[in-house]
Each structure stands twice: as C-alpha cells, then as structure tokens.
Image (cartoon, rainbow, N blue to C red):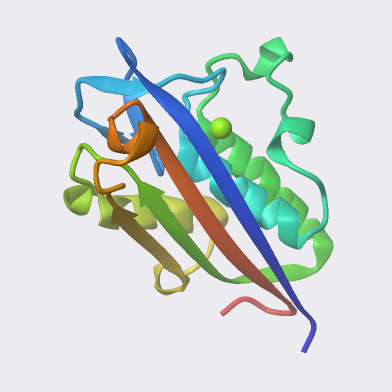
Length: 162
Ligand code: MG
C-alpha cells in the first residue's frame, strides 16, 4: 500500500477585539486569534499536515501573508484549496488527528462541530477525523491565555476514499 504521513503545527496570539475561530467554528470568548487570515490555527495546522504528506511545502508558501488576497480570508477557503492539491495527487485522506492546546475557553461543546466542519470541507467521513483539546496546565504563553497552539497529523493512501 502506498502511504504518506504529514504533521502540522501552528500557534496564534490571543488578542481582544477579534472573533475566535477554531475548526471553522466561531467560539464565544473574550479574545480571538490574531492573524492575516481569520487566525484559525486548527485549520492552518491541518493544511500543513496535508501539505507535509504531499511534500508540497507549507501554508506560508502557498498563501503568503504579504499577499492582500488573503487578508482576512476565512481559513476554510485555504483548506479547500489544499484539498484540491490532495485530489490532484491521486491520494486520499486516510485519517486526520488534531490536538488543540488552549487554557481557555473549554472546547468540549465545540469539538463535534469542528469535526463536522473539517470532514465536510475535505469531503471525507467524520469517522476519520479526530479532534482533541487540552490545556497547557497553566504553563508558558498558551497556559497564560496569550496564545492557542494546534498540532495535526494526516495520513494519505493512494486510491479510493474510505
Ligand atoms: Mg497560522
């Protein structure tokens, strides 16, 4: 079986006066993620995991933050573009696993919607997408509520989707 694996990581600062988007879900909170786009660190990590598996560089090369066309863009649109690259490769997404690290807010009520959004944007079954959330135990910038970090891992297989 022909098999590819990629990892992705992203971190964005939390600042007042911005909406908080994670996994294309708007989450009620006193702060949001700073970014050239909507700051959706979860989607950015997923994009990088998929680009990594395809050996196609990183999200910054594909969607430079110096390019005005990406100013304020919904990250879901970037993910759909990356999905196009996956489709072109002849590989299919076998599974996708995500870790969100944030001290606040609690994400349990939103994880299912994130999973549905990511599966829907990528045209894959929800059963192959997993979203995990944890705190940073109060340590460092993430633990101090100054940032949210995300990791993602993706595996791709050649052939038909599950
Ligand atoms: Mg980012």
